[in-house]
Structure formats: C-alpha cells, structure tokens
Length: 397
Image (tube, rainbow, N blue to C red; front, side, top):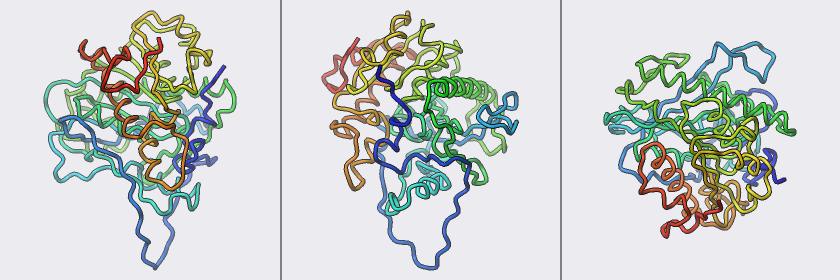
C-alpha cells in the first residue's frame, strides 16, 4: 500500500524546508530589533488569475462554542481561521493580502533560520475587503490544505476559480495546519505528529467537523450576519451572494481526504475533489453517491498502490473519475510548484514545467465544478483526458 504520509507529504519533505513548521506549541514570533537598514529581499511572486472578475477576500476568525478543541486539554472552544475569496466589484483603494500573514511568515523563517532570509513572501491578487460584485448568487467551494500546510498554499487555483465567478473559502485547521495566525498576532504551529493511522483518522474527522461548522457560518454570512469572533468589518454587498445550494469541496493531500469525509457526512456538499491524498475514515468503505474526482501523480498511483483509493473506488456509486498529472510529484498540485523555480537549489516537484502544472490543475478543478455545480457539459472533455490544450492531464479510470 502506498500511503501519502504526512511526514513525507508536507512542504518540509519537499525540501523547501521553510513553508511548514513543526514547533510543539503556539508561538508569537517577534521581529528582531535592529538599527541597521534591512537588506533588500528578493520578492517571490505568484501569477494572477485567468478569469475576467476581480478577486476580493476577507479573513474570518471563527469560534465553534459548541465544540471543544479536540487537540488540547484546555477545554477551550475550537477556533479556526478562514479566508473568504469572492468576485469583487473593484479593487481600487484596497490592499492585496499577503500570501502568508506577517506572524505566520516570521514563524516559518524562525523555524528554518537562513533558508528564506533573502526572500520576501509573495503577495496575492486578493483585495482585502473589496466590495462584492453583485451578479446574483455564486457557487461556493471549500478548500482544505495538506497536512502541515496553510490555507494559502493553493492560492493559484483558488484565485483563478474566483475570477471565473466562484466564492472559495480556504480553511486552516489549527494543530495540524502549519502556521495559523489569529487576530492579535498569536500564531499556532503544528502539534499533530501524524505518525500513525489513528491520528490521521482523527485529523480527518476533526477537519470534516471544522468544514461543517464553516458551512454553518456561511449561512450566517449570507443572511447578513457576522460570524467573525471580533466582528471585524465585512465587505460591502456580501449578503445574499452565496448560493449554498451549490456547494463543492476540494483539497490537497489530507485536505482532499477531508473533502471526501465532509461529503460523506454532509449532503449540503454536492461535489468534491481529492488532489493526491490518501483517504481516511468511513468514506473508504461507505463510498459516495455524489460526484467525486481523484487526481494523482504517478509516484502515488492511487488506484494500484493506495488501498484507501482501491477500496473507496469500489463504493463510489455517483459520477467518479481518476485523473493523473503527468511528470508531477505530490507538491505539483500546490503553489510550491511555482515558487520552487524562484528559489536557489533544486527541489522535488517533478519535471513538469511550473506553468503547465498550474494551468492543468486550474483547468481540471474548474472543469469539474463547472460540470457538477453549473451543469456545463461542454467542459467535461478534460475530465475524460481528452483535451489537446492540457495533454498533461491523463485519464486513468
């Protein structure tokens, strides 16, 4: 059995060594005092989205007071950080959000001193609290990151989906996500080790509960309420724009497994995608009767080497496909594939060119949700591995 193990399938394992942290307790990393001028940093960059709509975003601190945090003995309620990305009316006068918040970026650099000291983290193309574009209700997607990763690590795909008219909510899962910065500067780094199957099953179950709570919060937002714990300002025009009858979920690695677990538990989610992640929990034997896409790299070869994929495949009764990204490795599905070429040294993201990997993953994810949430059958050819424009996407089953 080939399991996409978190110890290997995090960004640490990719050799980047600076985009996931493994400290054992929450930290608030202070900037060092210095009177000398800071050296110039080389900026890392991410390409903008391909669609016609502007991208706005708002960060949300969500506290589930009906659930205690399952990873601590503190008795404190479970709290999450999420970013809601949406089509914006315009972006003038609104700052673009950083790829990593200031505290999270400092935590990364402190965990791996010297590795990224010469670089400035990327900026996104998401305008902070820009006004919402009013063109009816938009389909809503939930995104869950890989184990040890952050909610921003698939910004290239997320922003692209928004530029084509989706609302996408990215979610950090404290204690198994990498660096989660809360309002006020508190940073929670990863405490979950992920060395055994029981812990991974628990992580997926916790994440599924997190995502269900986020869906509840989105219903509050759509009614005009404000679920943010600090009641921070929301974008103008958000009320009534979320189509919660057309909800999808997708994720990378453990996030893909969490999307499947969420679908198994919650029928509000109509379609889902797992990008190269081993499945965990009841969905493996219980299956899904709604559309679900598996996409892997050759080194994973999920339907032949991963028992969870082999078993789940038998029980999928709805629309289902397995696709493969050619010449890729596990992290080729994330922003890391685009950042690695900008860094000194070689890291394992496969031999697929970064631009082709980004374009292929963007197109595949969008085609799937266009078909199953918008009913656009004309997009389905890519999901059969029959697109000349994206020959990197191969059809497995």
